[in-house]
Image (tube, rainbow over all chains, first blue to last red; front, side, top):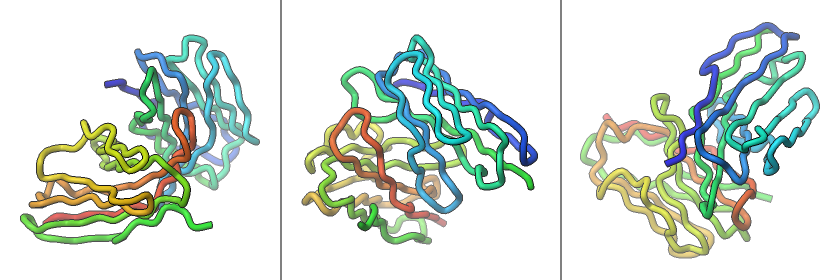
Length: 111
Length: 114
């Protein structure tokens, strides 16, 4: 079983601040995804990374896949209240096509 | 286009009762997942179907849980008998193809077993 550790577990910040959340594992992943989940809804995909060292940007969100494909980070610049939610990373490895999810980082951005 | 549809959205039942959760995946998607989400354990995979065939059911907690996918447009997750520790939000997700494809989640079924 591949374990994905996400940190921090909880984050409460003010609008306009920057933040980084992390997703770490001892396993190598062939692909890693980040999802955001709002209360009462299912997770929604933000990005998929597949190449070690890969960096992807989605407006104020920057995603990085570690060189060894064991870890990933999500950086948010100038956070807004609309960024509030649970951020989940999910990795797939080897011959498995089944994403394993971390427990998530719960982010609250106060106006 | 309709997304993944789950029913019921909320279910409250008493211990020992049978619970059936339903899922209609996105048309054309050939992979279907059932996950369970709790505060303590996060999102845990219960079972994965590909082309209506169960591929990985190692996450199904015990014999009280069973899942079926009789056709490409319908799946059920059944718990019999239910126990309080089964209380959680159960999500169904579908995907087109395999590997790095996006999972599309339903809104979930919140189960409370008293």
